[in-house]
Length: 352
Image (cartoon, rainbow, N blue to C red):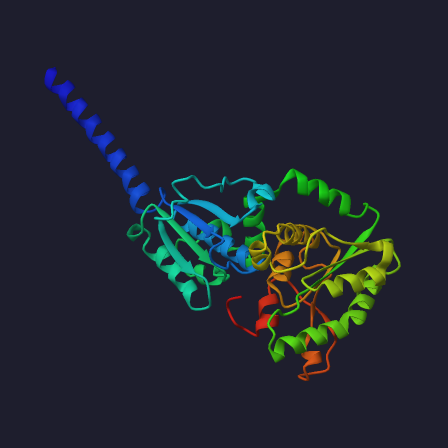
């Protein structure tokens, strides 16, 4: 009888040991104990908000592929990013341990460097439990080639992956929610929107693009007005060019919406300790994704707003730059859809 009891205990002990070892293997070697932290410390340029969203969404998908936690750290002192956008379904607030500057750091920023993140996907066991990274490239198309790509995302186009991930990660802070509620038109009014990015480089190409877009403003505003078809409407222009916003105000008068803040690059704003640039760009995207019609420019903010859009492809348009640089004489504004925006502007390049 004693032998039977000992055998039973031995079997139970072996089963418990197998379960514990299995969990240890899963947690420590396949990555479920790992934390992947999007780390924008303020000491390096993290680029514009569109670039940051690309890096965040890419990292979030990778965290699912390696079975780890996902955290976000954006340090734009004195601005508190977590007081503008707050966790929705995922708690992305990092712990002190996850913010330790001694943690492994991957600089995946740039057209050549972003591929270093793929090594983390391929060999998660070779990395420490906490990995900080910075990235500004949409890597979703490349990640689809891996067997570990989440099945729940595999049938979605990139745009819908962005929308799903963004909504899982972020919700507006109460103060910004109140601001948005005051800005949005009433239910019986339409909202027609334009996002314009003026190239901030001082080279000849940048100056030419800025002049062409400025010259096109009357035609763009006329197109927006036609979309309203005489129905009660509000109009919104999101841009890093204050002159475009001012011209919109003069054109549409009391029917023009304007978000508070300085329309400058958030990397520049953070250097000047001005939070209004970050607040403005977050509010701009929140309005753009709600528009009844949306005209896009060659801008990461445009792409993100289109990807998050509530109306998907309905009344979605792209500015045809080639009309103004001599390649053809097509329409200034052409219909486009969320799945072909990068191809429209980048002519087949996989990553934006």
